[in-house]
Amino acid sequence: MEFVDVLDEYGNKTGTIKEHSEAKKDKDYTLGVHIWIQNSKGEILLQKRSLQKRTFPGMWDTTGGKVRAFESSIDAIIRETKEELGIDIVASELEYVLRFPAQQNSKPMFLDVYLLKKDIELQSLTLQTEEVDDACFVPLSNVKMWYSENCNFVKQPYFEDLFKRLEEKTYECQENSSGISSYQLLYSRKEW
View 1 (cartoon, rainbow, N blue to C red):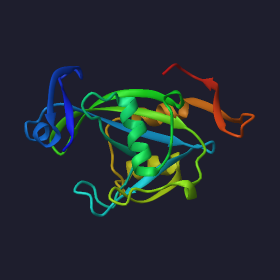
View 2 (view 1 turned 90 degrees about the horizontal axis):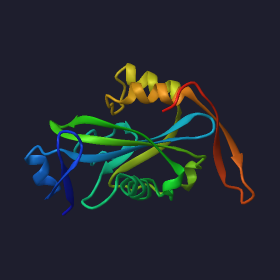
View 3 (view 1 turned 180 degrees about the vertical axis):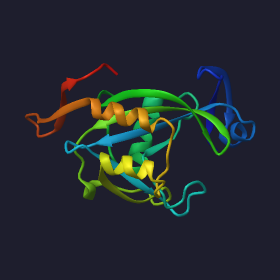
View 4 (view 1 turned 45 degrees about the horizontal axis):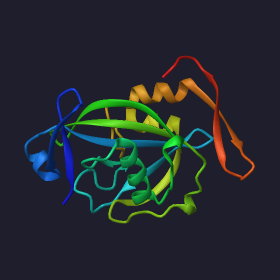
């Protein structure tokens, strides 16, 4: 049983906590998270949802999930990324992109969206089989095409804004003395 914070229509916590299925049934606003992982080639890490999933089975998606009661959205996306893909990340690696009001299965919610720019080897992933059947890196241009052509891809209304933001920033991958890749912002046409 998972408990979630109930939000108001502006995305603020109301102080009420409910079991997740009860909040869904009552059509209460809750908070979810998504992470977009982009490597130094500009490719996006997508995961194929398990065929066992109730919603969007077998469709390609970004990593995400619900924020539990008393949990921050940053802690939730770190947890979800570890659970679903086996990737360890820390808060300082994440860039907060936006909070977006959404509807999922006629349930009102907000999504906090994060960006992680990091080179990850696909063979290093540990997929959570109840959630994920496969994972791959896809060029951003292909992700945009899947979005516009109604391919087997879970779409969210915030994608167009995110695509613009991903294209507006150029990063250079640099390796530090311990061999860990990081990204340095080289150019941005506008601030996020």
